[in-house]
Image (cartoon, rainbow, N blue to C red; front, side, top):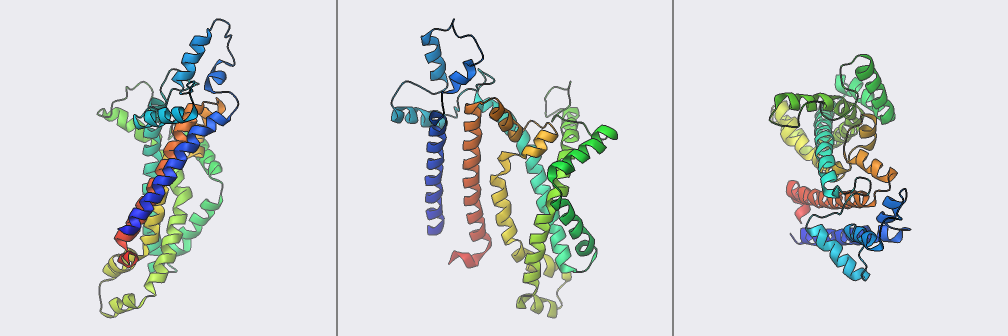
Length: 326
């Protein structure tokens, strides 16, 4: 418990530093969001008072920095991330809400499938070394992992969407159907648009989980207690999963928890190739349009999620491995 409290204190300090950096970065740049937004327009008809009101809307109030920082933190605690420059007067939290929903759906589904498939294949490859999974599936995964992902995604999009027409070319939902999760047609449209991006992520990413689990299983199988379990005549399935895999999966679970921290960052290449409206594509558009408030919101959420994932990983390791509690 003392260890977790110390780690929690460390992560809280890191979170505070992230908030401070996020506050100062746009203020260190030349100009401010209002200058960016008005750069391409004729501002002769705007009064100085109107421009000041715009700056206040973006959080750039005419006050000392400590007071600005206090206002910034107060707004964060209220869930107010400001308004978008490129999509003014849309609130940043509304933009992020839509992007996060699609990112969690796509990358979350892909992460769970990739982890599950990779771990199960790794267990089988280690338990039957020289078998089909170890001889053929593992090298296939290594080849796919060595190929640049954007190339795999582009080929899949060209063949299965453009040429064969089995999948849609882009978007996250079917056009012309109202967004209603109680409507089976809408849900099926979402799944239809989700299938190809998730499959490409699965094919390109299962190898790392599989290799890690295989190596861990090989080390665990060599332990004396596994030899003893085999000598006792216990069923292979029980030894494989309850004795060997249970201990071998610990490092993979830690990696899975850490991967959850980067989940909200989306998969930029996937979202760009498939025009999927997640956080990665939103961040790219924000960079292209110099939409500082949206970039600030995304960076802060990503940082906090990585810190939370690290803390969850520390907690999981202590919970699952009693040896670390001492």
